[in-house]
Image (tube, one colour):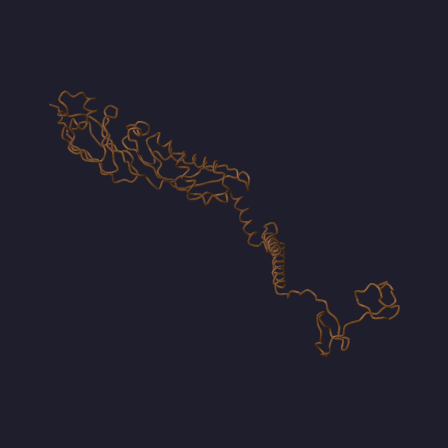
Length: 352
């Protein structure tokens, strides 16, 4: 007579074999209805939601349920069934995945400006991973999901990433840590990003579980300055050698200049090579030269003329006792001390 027999569901469950599905709508055709004593299976890390005419009716935590009037009071009241749940009902069933979704990527598309005490205003880029989960099923359904058939992680990532980057910008601005110390504070920055960003996630029924900073990179020009400072620090006791090395680098760069073509380029190359060889030869020569010792005061032996140290008491050549040179008064010839200012015999002033 043109009538179709209704198909009555006996078991309602979702065997999730995906890794990125957040919400799954149980497939039901137009002729399928839920009958009394049907079995609802909600697996661990799942929540089942019954929706009738766009309104959330009942929510089921993990477990196995025999659907009866006492199990779905809100849906029964909404339908106002005169015979309770003995007759069939029409409702949509959604399964929400409440596990953590981990290893999701975030990164800065544009650099973040930061004021640094050493380098002034610098631009930073960063990237890493994060993890989140659904903690308020009703709010997530109302604010994010709606009534689509399927909702995956990729559908919410474009919303989550800007929130994390915003939290990173706030953390960098408030932390006031030098760019040289950023690597030692990745964990502290990540925790601060999570704390500052979580209110935005909770407003949508989600929770940011973890943020990991893998790298914060500096602009190329700042990295070059840091490399130069590192080289200077390593060679601070060899400034002259460093200067010669930089001069050699400049000559090599000049030799590679494309403007010096043909025989001119060859000449520059040979000249740079020769100059470079001279630089290294000069460095080696200076390193191998014996260091001069400071000259010491000396005197001569009055007997053989040998050079002696100022403190020698005997001659190292003839063995005689070194004679002490005496001083005499130029007026009367009397012997006087070397340090005397007047003669003790005639009183003449000495040293005139």
